[in-house]
Each structure stands twice: as structure tokens, then as C-alpha cells.
Amino acid sequence: MKFPLLTTLATLSLSPATITAFTPHSLSIASNLKMSPQSTSSSTSLQISALESLADITTLSIDSGDIDTVSRYAKTGLITDATTNPLFVSQAGANGDARYEAMVAEAITYAKQTTCAEDGCPVPEETLNMAVDRLAVNLGKELVGLVPGRVSTEVDIRLSYDTEGSVERARSIIAMYESLGVSKDRILIKLAGTWEGIQAARILEAEGIQCNITLVFSFLQAAAAAQAGAYLISPFPGRILDWHKKQTGEAAYTPDADPGVLAV
Image (spheres, helix red, strand yellow):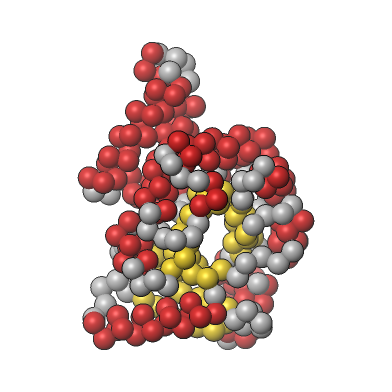
């Protein structure tokens, strides 16, 4: 099985974004560009040109929970997918923007009604988990309206070693999306690249729920994900590089010797 080639554009509203692109044939590093949302018009033109170059050789996915940031990049027509993680979801819920506050309020109301918490049922942890998942879905629904491709939504990382729990939460997330009019073919369920997470992906893929295996640091994880039929993997070349720097004491590697790039 060959995974789709995907390049993630990680963006944070208060810090520069980093784009790393890999050529389809050699998987060698093509570019590593710092992009700041507070750029001048000339540098913005350079950024768009860089994005165009990247989009010619790979599918671009934006990794952000900031609706305005995703919208700005999506309007270039060069971004296909989007992904979120618990950090982005929590940042969205706490940033004071009325749009996000409405998402939080709806998520809390939904969770209380769904778990009977409003009637005093003793399920506070279940209610909290439901609210967090619903908030992620509410944010994901907004992102689906901005990008033409898929949006990845992550299962609670605490379930990384719980296949049954991961499958149950993934099904619940998809059901929430579908109740909001979002088809499951627009969503990727993001699961940790543990043995249990990969087995959860095997079950979900058989049900037509496609998965993104994240926290991939090795070929063995990638191979296991492929054997399980996962739609996509998310390797972490930057973290692989960090590990090698710590183990070897090397301050930097050239692109053609970068252990993270070579691993991918």
C-alpha cells in the first residue's frame, strides 16, 4: 500500500509557520520556509509563490485551529486538507472570540443533554469527554467549509493504548459530524501510531471510516499502518531529528543527512 503524499503546513496565529515539502520521487527535502502572518506585501507574494511550488509536488494540509488563518491560506486555492489536535481545540475554546465561545457553549449543552448530566446523572467524566469531542467536531465542521479536502479530528490521546475505546470514540465523532450534515468521507479520524491505535484503524477502515495514523516515528509503525489499511500516516520528522540531536550532540544536520527526512 502506498500512502498519499501529504505536506502539512503548521500554523499558529502568534508564530511563524513552517512548511516542509518532500519531492515524490526522492523524498529529499525540497524547501523549509518560514512564513509569518504579519508579513509585508512583497514577502506575501513570495509566500504565495512558495506555496504554488509546493502545491505542484504535494498535497498541502494546514495544521491549525484558527479559522481566520485557515481561511486566509485556503483562499489561495493551494490548500487541500486541514487537521486539528487537542491543543488547537483548547486554544480555540479559550481565545475569547465570540465564534469559538458559541462552539464551546453548544458543545457543553450537547454533552449535558446527551449524557443526562442536566438531570443529575453521575457521569461527569463522560460529560466532559463528550463536550471536548463535540467542540472538536464543531471546529472541524467550520474547517470543512473552508477546505475542499478532508479534515482530521483526533481521538482522545489517553486512549492510545485502548483499541475498543478508540473505536467507540471514533464512531461517536463520526456520528456527530453526520448529525451536523458532514459526510464521513470528508473526515479522517486521527489515531496514535501505537499497536492498539493501529488495530483501531483496522476496524474503522473496514467500516468505511478512514484514518490518519499520527505520532509515527519509525518504518515499523508505517508498515503496520499500511497493513491495517490506514488511509494516511503522519510521520514526525522534526521529532526524529530532535531525538538524534540529543543522542549525538549534533547541533544541526544538512537537509540530505537529516535523520527525520531520511526516515520518511
